[in-house]
Every structure is written in C-alpha cells, then in structure tokens.
Length: 397
Image (tube, rainbow, N blue to C red):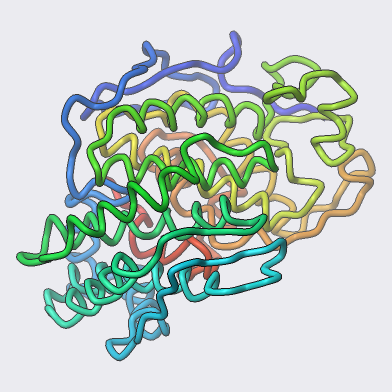
C-alpha cells in the first residue's frame, strides 16, 4: 500500500541558495542547511510571481504561444478583469461558518482577486487602464476596512490577504504612480496581519492560507519579524498536513493533537497512512486543494526571496499531488482509504507545484502531469487561486 519515499533517510530538510538549479531524480532528495531567518533584502515584485516570471508570461502571450494565450484570454474574459468593476468595500467584513452570514466576504475576496487579475493584465498589455482600475480597488478597501469578525474571520483574512499583496507588489514595483500605497500597507499591517500571524488551531487549510497571506504581507511590508514567525508556523504545519512514510506509523501532531486517537480523529477517522495523504483527504478534495495550493504558493514566494523551501517539502508535495491527482482522474478507491469513498473536486491547484517539482527539479509526476495538462487553462476557485496556467505553466523563471 505504501509508495516509495524520496530519500532512504526520510524527508530532507533543505533550502536552496538563491539562483541554484536543482535536478532531483525520483528517488533522491537534495539536502542543504535550513535558512531560519528572513531575507536580508527582499526581492520585488516578490509575492508568488517575480518580474522574471512575469516577463516570461508577457513574452508567451504576445507571441500567441499556448497554453499561455488561451489562459490569458480566459483571464481577460472573466469578471475580475472588467475595467468597469466597482469595488464594494466595508468597514467590517463579517463571515460566519460556511459564509453564514456573508456580510462583505464574497465582495472582499472577489475585489482582491480582481486587483490581482487587473495587475497581471497591466503587466502583459502595459495598458494603464488596468493598473488604475487595480489601484482604485485597492484604494477603496484601504480607505474603508477596519476589521474582520465572526467565526470565519481568520480564514477570510487569509484568503483575501493572499491576493492583495500579489496585486500590490506588481503595481508598486512596475507602475509609475500609486499615491496611496502607504495607506494600503497600513491596512495590511493593522487590519490583516494581526488576524493572521498567530495562526489557527482549525483544519490545516486554514492555517496554511493564513500563513500564505502573512508571508505575502511580510514581503510587501519588508517585515522580517513577521516573515520569521509565519515561516515557523508553515514549517510546523506542512508535516502535520501532508504525510510521508518517513514520519513513522502516524502523521506528525500539531499543537495539543499528538496521541494516536487524537491524530486519527483529526485526520477524519483515517487510520491507514500512505505517502501523500492529507489531513483533509477524507473530508473532501476541495479543502485539501486549498491546503496544497497554499503550500505551493508559499514555496514560490520563498524561492523568489532566495530561500527556496521546495527541496525541503518536495517529498510531501509531490506525493500529495500525485495521490490526489490519481483519484481526481478516476482511479479506483480502495476500501482502506476513507472507507472506500472520496469526495472529489481538487480544483485548479496543481500547476504551481507541478512546474516547480517536475520542470525545475526533474521529479517524475505522471498523474499530476496528466491532470494538470488536461485541466488547462486553470481558472480561479474564486477564493484565492487564479490563473496559474498563465503564470506558472512551464515557467522556468
């Protein structure tokens, strides 16, 4: 039942030196010392997409190359790219469980995704209308929002807070004028970061999305202390979210969840553990996809910042992508896995990890490759994932 784990000694704890190219075969892991501290100097734009990655995308779209041109057309045809979009900011965004109540939750997430979408459109086209519309959305929220409330406030803050700094980094460092950028930074520091930085004791996708937002915000603010705290939580959460057999007979615990009974209950009652299983696999693939996506997004940002964590998490991420891709593609579900029944719906979340692990690091990922290629162009989950075929398909930068 168990699959081969990269490296006989188990999970390698590794980080790349900036600019290093890794070629990792399917049966080995590159080892390097972990870098614990934040970058001495932050790279910009440096949240999820770098200038080199953006330049690669722009060149592909302008030349009409596929799949980037189709992905760009998909993005430009979405509601998020509308030049007539009117933002809907609120002073208090109230989000209850399963969006009940939903007082500004959808509006905030979609405005943040729109700002990111418009910033990408600006970079590709150099049409200033896209940049000024992105700025108008960010300015409207930074002039208005004061708090997030109710039970889903941390998750909502994580989802919206993941998209805002991606947009803000592109605009701030590639567009010549944004008078209210300091106010936007104040919003991230005072409204978003306090809700995020201490993490969550809820399901893993919550804390991973929250740490994605915290790390992106840390880059925009050049806040080394928040970066370090968020990265420490990320490093603790990943092995408690994605299992590999090198962990032993049980997944890693998190917080006070550390006994066999507690861990099995936390893992949705699953008691047989195989490489790539997620803490939420037996809940559903949709929430699992949120967690896998946030892990990939964080890794992309660390790579841009010269502190690549992909080698550190490669075993877990490649197995998780492979296992969930297999069943999303229609593979038969064994009786020992979630009682023989899975709730599918992984979402557009494989492109980033597949590009990093397969294309950059040379890891064979047949199931993930098949799912990724047949799902192109990957769209948006309307929460915090958007246009990843455009930004990351075969992107070597």
